[in-house]
Image (tube, rainbow, N blue to C red; front, side):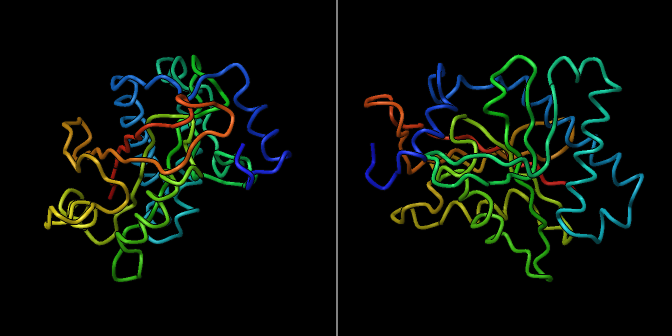
Length: 237
């Protein structure tokens, strides 16, 4: 056990991972495509019901609406209900080594047929460069949390969700931030692949793959590393 991790912190993680080998098996792309459609549809519903809030209010206000519409979808859509058990906003979670007990990812999607201890995490950010909500903040305060073990540390995939208010083009914006033109320079944010565009019925969807910089305190070598994480970037306007 890392000497920096206290016994109490270790106990937190040990209880959470008991009986589970991490990282969990990857979620099928078919399931993730369904999540994409659900997030997009919930956003459209929220925008139709409360256009001023979606267009002008805080990230928290928009995400609260999104959570409500996603949970309504569980009530109203039998197919969605078969996949998703619940959606929580700001649900407290523990980081990878138990030293942080009150991490609050924006959305936690719990699947009906998958460990409820490790939901699919969705981190949301406003992209609006004129108001200071830049792509750098999107990466520093969003992507980075998946790489240092704060969020989704038991999973192999997660979502970055952007509420775009300045018409920033997704693919080129992410390429500029995650794929430096000088190939001799190590890509920032542990980028291993991407950004690459994925065909989707909802429009532009981008996937990136990143290395992670932490190790599991409760799994001995060689099973102590989490491996890479795939981030699905869904930008909505």
